[in-house]
Image 1 (cartoon, rainbow, N blue to C red):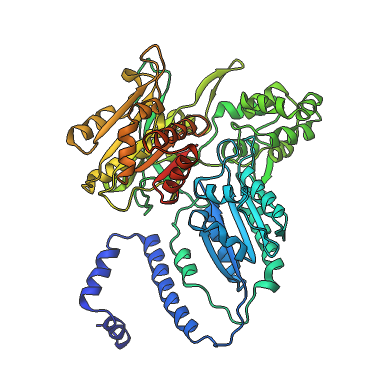
Image 2 (cartoon, one colour):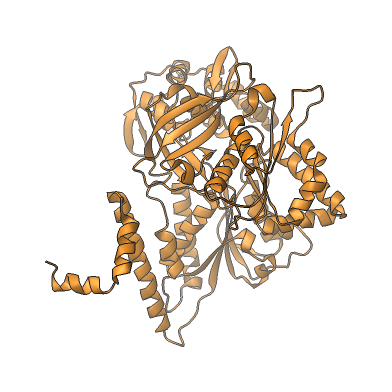
Length: 600
């Protein structure tokens, strides 16, 4: 029998509400129930905070608002901005965290305190949601900002030449406009959490006197944001199971592309079409053995990583990057080994870049073998980071699974076979039934239209087809009425038409309205997806004029730039616009989230 307290609690909910609540949590495991209880508690705090806010003293002093802007391509800058916003709220600051895509550039002149988080992709390019603000600050329209105090965090990867270039651009331009940097810009490499936390704490201390109000209340959005995070994250991945790895290119293909299926059963992980899957991997035994031999080390030697003691063998297998090369490794390896040839290479930046483009970490230590102490080797290497793959499935279709389309990086160079770290692990070294650490990475910059009746145009050559397979599965299950047009390209029709039967089935059913194929090596003149776009320019522009959303997924360095150039040509020609007007039209599509890219 229920106690009087139980009856009182139950009476707060009607019978229908209780039924809905019971149905909602049916089948939840323990972790999910704990998460749900935190979510409900968070909602109750929102209500309490609002009630207290309503009782705040009328004459309470208001401190300036700290505006936190983020420009993010894959989500790292967004998540970092939100996390920093939480730390600022905890200090009592009034904050406003907003995407650069949703921010009016002319508001900058009204700001007193600003923190920018921005990533860089491609050849030093700004992420899509930062393009307008980035261009505005570089234009003559940008106002003088003598009253603005600012700080900048750039996110990037030292493997690339234009490391954190967009962050550097923002810092330089704000300073030129008269704004004052209250702290040195932070340029973050792939592993940045600890460094960013220390920087954030220092910044909050600097801003404390200017931004702390007499009375401060936690913003309701802070609670909502805090309870919306997944149980499994980059820092706490889920141990999933590989259920399928199938080669989907032909025997004579120049590419080895695999369809990968992973079970997420009992994880509670939810993802949406457009999201990515973070995949942790283990370096191959061969790669580890070669590094040990080149550096004259014993795998049983004990080393320390983040206060954890482990063998060098385990560290090289599970903790450290052995494939992607970057200038920082060459510098650290040279300092530890005193190698004169590497010292000369470091002094010629162009030669160093060319050297690194052709080599993995393994190649560098084998070309310059040195007797280096185990801990010095560990200190020279950067932490192994997960790889992000565009998800190729909709959970409405596959439920507790996630599908990927993975190009196996596999080639011969310098007398040895080379494989990609993650792709080699997924495609060859991990057996069916083997376990793999994963997490879902949200990508709000690559989403299907909220209205299922809206038409979409998808451009995805090669493995860029992955998210569009998810899009079609989602629209198929939801019986969406919007038209769908796919542009797909690869070398050969007979060898490289990925998911051919699925696309033909969608075309036959009418879900796929049109497909435009570009197989570059099936004729004397190479044909690419941008060529098919130009051939269909009039119809493509008509779709855009009717409200279609345009998506691009794949190679950022060449394909995405060529596709954008073709799109601008089409807008200029069939929209009867000047070059400048075509660029404004495209900018309008981007601002309306009708032009979205998932490029890498």
